[in-house]
Amino acid sequence: MSRRVAAQPAVTPEAVQRIAGAIREYEAQGFHRTGTAIDRMSGEWLAALVERAGPRATLEPFALRRVDPVVSTLTIAGRRIEGIPLFDGAFTTQPGISGRLGSEIAVVETAVNAAGAGALGDARRSGRYRAIVAITKGARPGLCPSNADDFLSPFGPPVLQVSSVEASWLAGHAAQGSSATVVAYVMRNQATAVNVVAEVPGTDPSRPPVVVMTPRSGWYRCGSERGGGIACWLEILRALAASQPSRTTMFVASSGHELGHLGIDAYIARREGIVKRAGAWLHLGANIGAATMLNNNLVQASDDEMDGVLTKGMIGAGLEIARRAPRGRVPAGEAEAVHHGGGRYASAIGGNALFHHPDDHGPAATDPAVIARFSAAFVDAVRAIMLAA
Image (cartoon, rainbow, N blue to C red; front, side, top):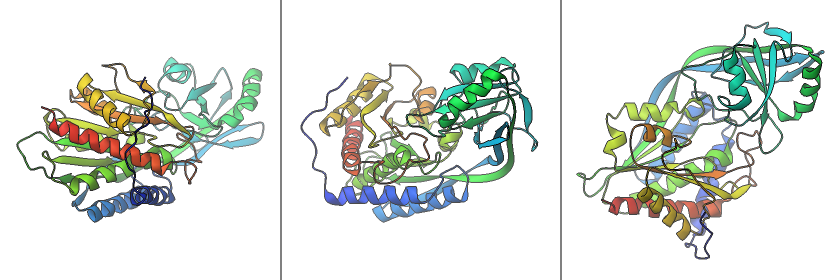
């Protein structure tokens, strides 16, 4: 664990204002679900901000069969509860599936993004249940859906995710074996999503490039989940565009995060060999500068040198590192694709009590001054990577 240090970089009011403005604009756009009209509009907005900083931006498309929920409900004893289907499970017909809670329809609690593990994962793989009701357990009460990590290879019965505020009521009905009806009726629509891509040329094009990536899609408005990473991504791009970096820096803000990281996979597929050809990847993950859990930062890295580069930048910016992923463990987020491809990477992820929560927006969700310090740390890390062999 690294302790916070007193020294902090100078943070200009202009940078803080830019960061706050970008996050407010992003979260005001609405539900950032991959392949939707809002997702496309948000990509165009981000591309315009890139070009305002100097580099040309490109919207790179990729196709998907979007899941559009039509009816997502649980009905017990005449009461109907609204939910959200798990996007990498099966779905129901419009009438839904009826059965007894406990024996035919499972009721399980699940942490955010643990849909393939624990009690929910066991229930999905057991073959025992016709449907599953998953009570989502975030840091705050509410409906906090999990990502569909297996979006392209769905498994198990239909899963309806419901708010944690229903936990006691559902436990009582499960104990009684009450009759219930689960409806997870959706339409599948062909859609196109986009990654926002840009490049800052280096003075020595013979040297391997550095890639800076951050996701830009997710559940609800995701102001503090995605906003800090997007703002830092823009600040790094701005800083490098105003200088003459030695290496080319490639930037990608990817959609498809909540659907098994579809966007970063599409980005890599377009660039044969890029995972290993790049000198290093910097992943700006979830919850950077989230105001609810500022001192719960996680560092993930492929090796000691990459860990050291990011650690030095964060400590120099007065940022605490509370957790480190064990070396060799598959990292969370889009860094997973680089890990599996044998590339070098450093990754930062924060903590957030509003993670995947419908209330993840507004001034209380993020700390723009802290995010400005993160951006300074990341700029230092990128520049240090460029100097490395």
